[in-house]
Length: 66
Image (cartoon, rainbow, N blue to C red; front, side, top):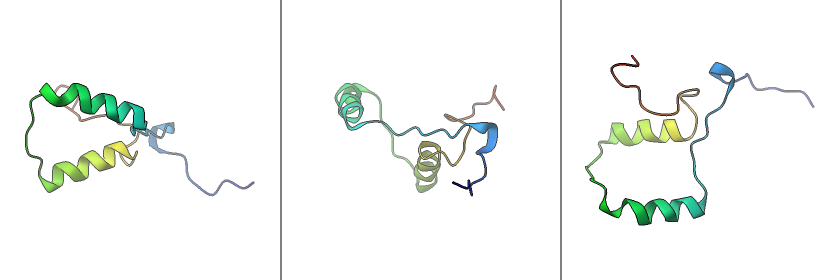
């Protein structure tokens, strides 16, 4: 088979999606966590992180990392 896709930046595609079982665990344990409203941009960034579009990043970059 011919490989038509380029390799992901950094060599590793980060897929941060979780299993259905893990979703239920997170829902249960997160009920007491603080919460806040996300902007449309925040939601977009979260989606891009989760689906690997920002690979090889696996989370937000903080000031010290930058």
